[in-house]
Length: 426
Image: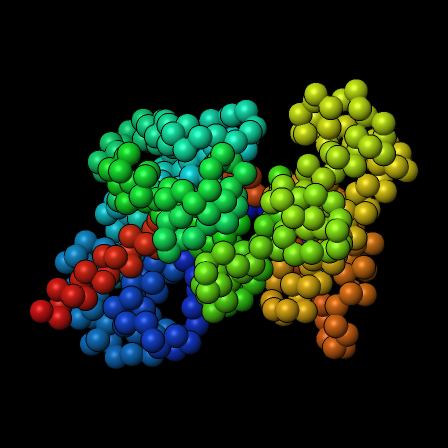
């Protein structure tokens, strides 16, 4: 099954955000956190329904929600009457996250465009901003200037002061240690092992969290998209590189050293094509945009086009393929076969409930044509059961920044809930 999916506006109306965790599926989390996350995921929910969903007593929910209201994290909201219903006496109330309590910014830093969104505590979009840039590595100082400029612009657009923010989430390609706030390597910087979270925090005076950009696409799907009701799913992105984010038990899985699941750097050809990571034979070196452009330049004798941008080259390659050029089609077909190798490995290793293909290159449908899916079927372990469903999600660049905002919202809420727990224990 292959489904195309287009996301709506995440900022419209009072909607729940965050993973929809089944009742009693994760009893290790403190009840206060479970109650808050239940309210956040629902958008609006009566106390009695919270108690029912979590399988706890209404009295416990009443006590905890009163503490969360006093802390300013949630609020009571008059529930609108049902159609044709006559309200007598005190109107019914529901619980919702206090949207104005906190605001955060999420950023996607990429080779061609920097994007930021500013959202409230309920995850609703307030403002967004983008800055184009020339491809190529930057110095750390140049990156900090980009971040500060983007922050200033999105705050100005929202009419929000920097001091009114509770934190910033940043996503960028490469090997990123989220726990340490370290960028071990990224094609965007001319240096390695950069303490980007600490440096940015010192620069802007706010808490900062960083992560690999594909983890944040998975985070966006977990909070705002098709992954909200799934405990396990994979996101594979194809842009300038090939990335993978994996959600396991409603959480981003990063590995022991927090840099795992680099699908783009699994080896599909010994001593093969050179990858931008410096090694040879990586999946990315056959599927990413620079790989397609390299193949087009060689196979189609496009040496005279080497000065053109990768985007222009790929558009030309796609136009030739659509027009019936056999060589252009074979380039996409070959890349699709390598992609099938990568996706079959994901299924064989993790058996996810869903694989989401995302990223700018998903507009090139040759990459996921019927032949690619058939190749994937041939490479998967034959269990006799249906293949893992695959969806193509036509998100724009704002999704990546929204994932970074979800990273910040998650960190802010967990910090606040921990602080409340400590106060309550005193």
